[in-house]
Image 1 (cartoon, rainbow, N blue to C red):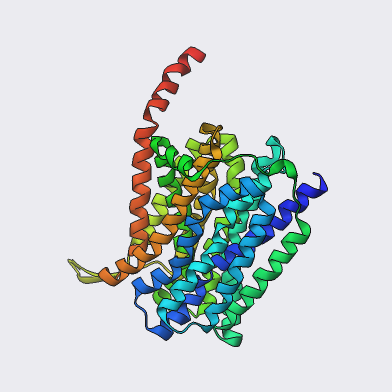
Image 2 (cartoon, helix red, strand yellow):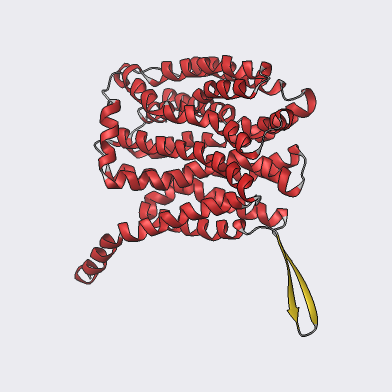
Length: 413
């Protein structure tokens, strides 16, 4: 591997990791803010999800600008533009101020749509998939937030978190600029306009992949924002312990993505996505079951039963869900690469937007369901329903293809 492509890959992955950590900062930071402001669950969900909204909406224009001006300058300016909103959070005192600044923080989340094409253009077709998978592993920045933010809060208070993150983001932008490069042949390569990107929605396959990605990526983002608070509320853990356990979901959800790309290349996008959904279906069913106490009348008297997942059983199931989502994120993009070779950029932008919007909507719905039902595991009930929709969709959408393959198999023999 040549020096420049390797340097671009390492510096871009590092930048994306820090950007993703900043993007997910309210997963931990939102807990003391919730206590300070007396927010209900729905308000907390909106606070945590606000950066995700901006990060999703800017994906399409950022992808267009990357094609037009080059990924290096776009990613550098993007990181610098998010520094001030991140730093100002430490001075916010009202709920509306946190929401407004959260929109600015969300700019960091747009780094994925810049870094992916920027990195891909530096590598040959044979290495492009692996390079994008390595870059995508920067999703593990969500786990980085859960390791670092609780320690900062314990030492200096929650106001120190946005200040430290702002300094880290600025330093990352400088490091990225020093160790990245620009290739003139990568700039002005065309790209789709916003209107052209929206035209791909007429293809039913694109809508189908939007739904799948909203489950595997939107579900990942939603749970990454929600799990620290869930551990605190459901099991009574301290913030540091809760964040550490929540990282057991966030870390594999990002790091395993490169492996998911290799598995999808070997076994095919349909088969991998199908099994990913079934694994999630089983795990989410178990996670959905609330803590339950019941009395059964037997011939020998009353039998009292308590049904509940221990924290370790819960964490193990959550870990499996995180791995499945990571593999699913790669397999969905394998679908796109196989079926939309001529306009992969347009389809990727729309599908990525759908996944990001899923990550914005889900935390709000998690909070609303808890406020309405009083059952914390209702968040997993919601995700279980979305996976059911995906399985039904996959069964009927790919049924003709399976039937055709079965018909041709004897002839091939």
